[in-house]
Image 1 (spheres, rainbow, N blue to C red):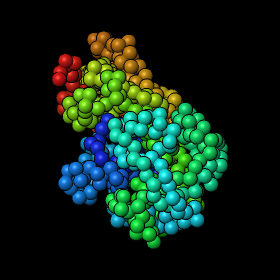
Image 2 (image 1 turned 180 degrees about the vertical axis):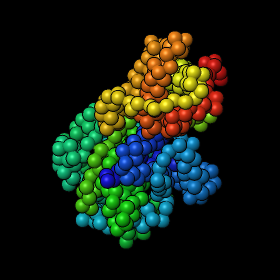
Image 3 (image 1 turned 120 degrees about the vertical axis):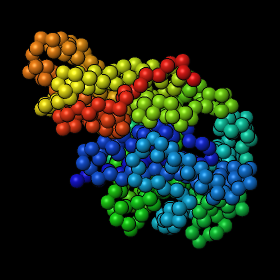
Image 4 (image 1 turned 135 degrees about the horizontal axis):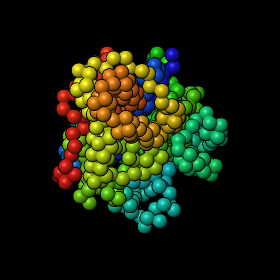
Length: 481
């Protein structure tokens, strides 16, 4: 039986959970549920990234200890995962003692590639990152993301010999051993690698940033937050000795946003190669979500909370929209109008209507008895192929071809007319075929909309219709605020 290890990136806890976090959680959840459906042994991990200067700075503003702030914010991400019906097996926090201890073991295992040197450069606390002189000059000395001047830093740090791993990482991507999806993101990182990787700073002095994991053997240095956060993917498995690590590594698919591709497609593979481990099989890189064509921001007044949508429409409607109507291989946009249209036209009118019509007719004409349900015979090869390459939108397109096809079949066959013709055998055959279609649709929807799939399956279980309590997707007033 195949083992399947799936991860999201771990959100940084300096801000509230947003639509992008929610989308990433459900994308990984689809992969995990689909793998379980295939009978594979799955471990799905998510969590939170909690160290670094931004957290310490924010905590100081709020007059809190960094750990207290991290506890509060991490709980919000955990709550969102629950609200989204995420089937994760692990939720790692980088403040967990196990992560901290194992991160130090990884550092020691990398010591052949670590050296100490003086560094002079430009740093932004908001990004927790260093920037080149060219980048600083282009932005006139002010970070555009955080509207604050870059800090000029001169300090002695530890460095990782990332330059040693340019060719091995490049070879792994070129050969397909380390697959990056979509192709545009693969090409982007290949271009970076062909220019050559430079060694990177992986620590900060403790007197500059104290909120972090101490460098083994040097209490005056703290691990750079991005460096140690990457390690969570194996520390959560109990690297190096735990049975979970031996069973589940390498990861089957790691799901990340496009803004952190360099960390996950260059630095993370180099760390793994440095400690003698295999690389993940697939790195899937999703895009960003805008709101009504603009970057989401509280200052612009267009911030939308995932909870706001879920509370109004339900979790499966949320999952459906962000998996089908946000392009899997690019950026996408959310607006209330497009969400309402998708909900009312596709979920209520098409899927909900197919279920309610079928149930009503079986109850009316056959007293709720379906009889033998023939196996579905649709070709789902394109659906499976889309799932394999993380094309969630295309997989749902395939499901909706069946949903629309079923509604067309009902309109063409007109079971209500067959009932008037007093042909019970033909009527039973038509209604059983409709039931078979809905059971197959439910099976295909299971990874995407688990509650909806369970409701549909429950209606037609054991050849007897069990009417839904209410409608599957009650229509929404499109003007509702």
